[in-house]
Image (cartoon, one colour):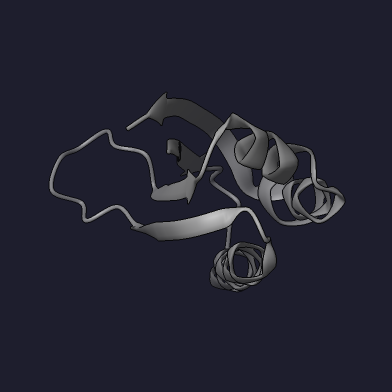
Length: 97
C-alpha cells in the first residue's frame, strides 16, 4: 500500500467560501477516483502553533494507483481551480506501509 500525505498552508486572502469549495472538491475527487482505497482529511486541530492549516491522507494499492491519481485530469483541474488560488505552501510525502 502507498499512503500519500499532504499538508496545506492557506494564504492570508482565503475565505470561508474558498475553504468550503476546496473540501467539496476534495471529497468529490476522492470519492470518485477508482484508485483511492481510503482517505482522511481535516483542519488542523490548533494544538501547536506553526502547523499547516489542513491535512489529507490518501491510500492506494500501489505506486501505479498513486500515479494514476496524481496525473488524473480531474485532480489537476482541482489543483488549478481550488488549491493554487488559496495556497501559501504545501508539503507532501508518499510512503509504503
